[in-house]
Image (cartoon, rainbow, N blue to C red; front, side, top):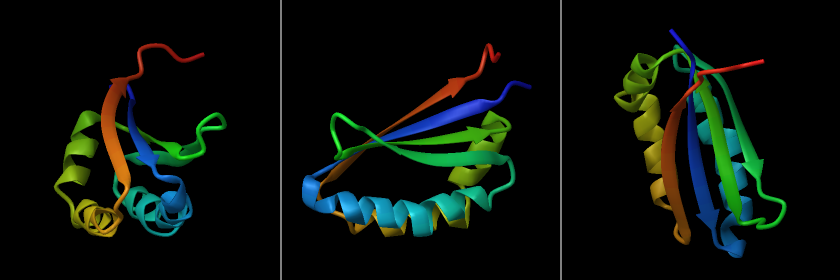
Length: 100
């Protein structure tokens, strides 16, 4: 089964950028990586718009993502991020169809 890549685009106000980075590096990323089926996770910061971030997580399957979304780790990530004001997030999931 092909791998699935999940993108979370986060837009933060300039005064929240450091908090977003800290939360992702110390809480969100490590919690996601604990889940079976999470192959990798990285956080990218936009050069042109330093308040914009993209979390890129590679998963074994959609089933692994679904299990993660129902997991205590996902609930904990939501608890961490709910308290941060001045951010907006959008999630998109893509199936890998070609890889060189």
